[in-house]
Length: 118
Image 1 (cartoon, rainbow, N blue to C red):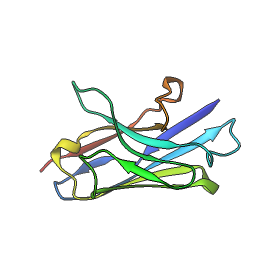
Image 2: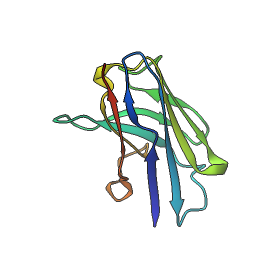
Image 3: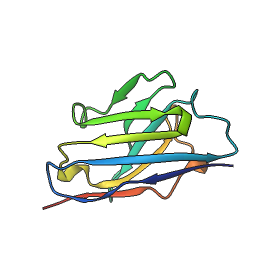
Image 4: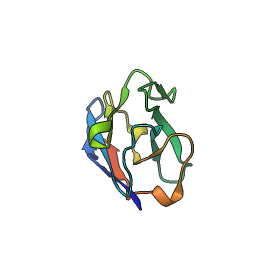
């Protein structure tokens, strides 16, 4: 069984930065060929895709985070990262990693809370 574990969230002031990490483990050989993504869900809102990265390293982003967030991966370590800069209060949400082609509920981790507030 594959598990995804997110970490790195916290409380940060507007304009601050955080780096989220996602560790993939379990009965997998490698996530190298898998498109991965970061999603977020704020209270009372639908889950939204924030950033996606293919196995080859191509990326795309939601318009709301372009120029501020950067997704990356380390296939050797089965890790996916999200560098978040210039954070805004509207970035407050629980952040999850999952596959990038579609959300797979069975891969849902505990998420990591990001709160942007002064």
